[in-house]
Image (cartoon, rainbow, N blue to C red; front, side, top):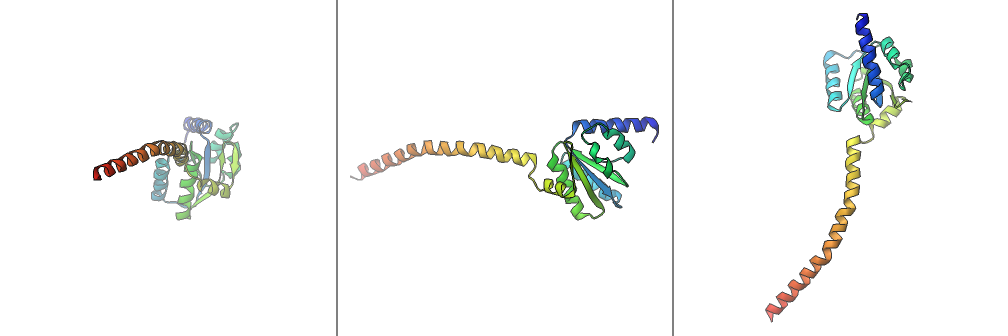
Length: 172
């Protein structure tokens, strides 16, 4: 990697640090190409990105950002995963680490707050942002559905009473 490539990498990572809310730091303990490709595919499907970078360059890019706290984790063969949805990136990383012991989660950073392994795992157990939105919409729409049912119930009861009188009048 020459100097221009290094500058471009630092600039791209600085842009990532400026535009993301969640970052997970992982250590590669011998993942093969197929496993890394599978991990990247899963990350992409969840709206996240997984990238291996030089620790020194990532440290330079993190300087002066809320993610500066990750620098002690950047030793050995590390990689970063990030996304706007904090739960999705943590969920994919934790699920992949469960099935593949060659990926170790070192920690993370959520909007400047450092997270250890257990906190990343706890974050992964939360429902995703889309699921939370769906639950919120469900909570909001349920009372409206019930109100509509209550308002329609008297009309339905009146119709059944009139129908019963009509049947009674025809029988007589």
